[in-house]
Image 1: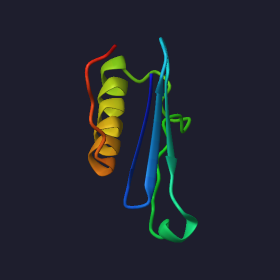
Image 2: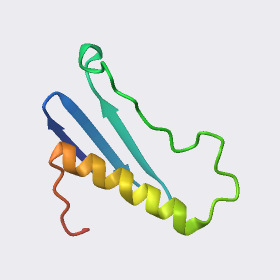
Image 3: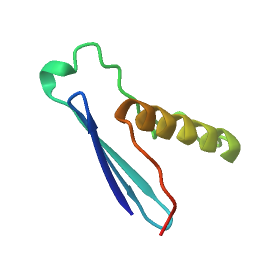
Image 4: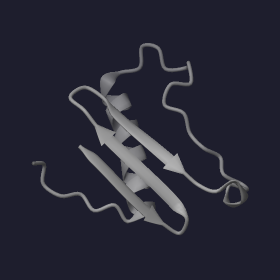
Length: 76
């Protein structure tokens, strides 16, 4: 499944497969001032409980959906 949404110059592309989800964010360089960013695999999470990982992923998706106006529909 692919979903693309743009709002206020920020473009988000989500691609979901069977075992993986790829989230791409595209923003013009001049609009990136003060942007902190995020990393899913920063090298500090070895042994992290799956519940914690799922909570973090849910937070990430919620953030992206809210700020891009992403509307989630039923799966086909």
